[in-house]
Length: 500
Image (cartoon, helix red, strand yellow):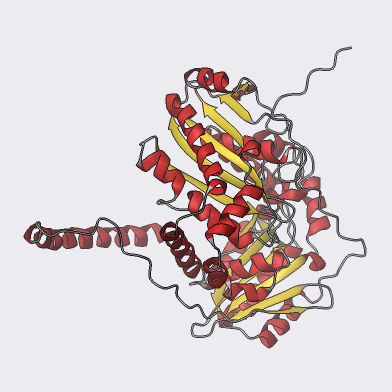
């Protein structure tokens, strides 16, 4: 059904576009001699967002209930979020938290996966579950009258999952296939290696979704143990966003989750996010025969609670957060070395990650490496021009406003604040805090947190076409074979065999 509706929508769009082009073509032809401005107009004033401050309440069992009301439409998104995620994966069991979350909806309370899906569909919604860094979540969006039954279903999958052996086997097979496909792509493999290069053996260093080898090692007992350890009310937040009042939120939460008992044992402490890496500043991985090279530059970043968070967000927007940002400007627009170059800032509880990526022809990988290093360094070497900064802020503000258009988007933003223990009132202060960032603050932030000497670069591709030039410029660069990597090892290399 969804595909058919999408096809119709695309057909309508194509017809509309053809008509528009035909009409506009005549207008352009008639006005061919007109002149157009060389630069786009300046961004308009930032919009004013009116977002109610979320309300937080705590049930006797420790479950935090956060609600934010949006009246007007009878819709509510419910998300049950844990304050734990992939960072809690045991050694050699990368992907355990993600696999556990995915299995929640594959059988619970005596109902099979199809029965749970049918129950959610009968309510007009669908259950979505996944784990990230520092959080695991399952959620559903329904009309307001259906919310009590939706919360009962949510409680069932979170509290009483079956973890049936056949579903576990199926999930492992699918995850392993997905990972093999993803890691055959240079950018994906380079990104995984970059995480190890920045975080080492720390909790954020491994692949959050696992590796083919680690997924195969996970047993049903491992899944049950992690669920018992982390899925508890004093480690959970119930977020309700939409047509609901705080009083209604507390009443419904008590009805569905009030008898969820808090264990007598204390909650497990989170491991340290990063440790010293064993990898060099420049790592080359030979994926022999690869048509292109994936280039990733990474740097440690401050955690989410850092006072300079919004300065970092704006700095990333300048560096590579949009099509018009500096990385794409230098690598794609000016030189045509890639179809796209971008960066992202991922702050977490105990650490953070800056990561820039581009895919390019194998012979041009050294040039892309140098351009990335230059752009990282440039943020701390001078102040961002006012016009450039205004454009990047406008992109951020527009994106944030769009993220709040749906109850699901609103719930996700609120959940992030709650998971990291930040003031819930920040939901309505994003625009003001972004607009307050100055060029001087970005320069100071980059000098403090983006030291060019600590950038880690990983290049994956047909190394014969780029390794000689890169190793000549940096003799300390290491070269590894993609087929011989141990993706679960902090060094990415198999342990040496023990000699008798």
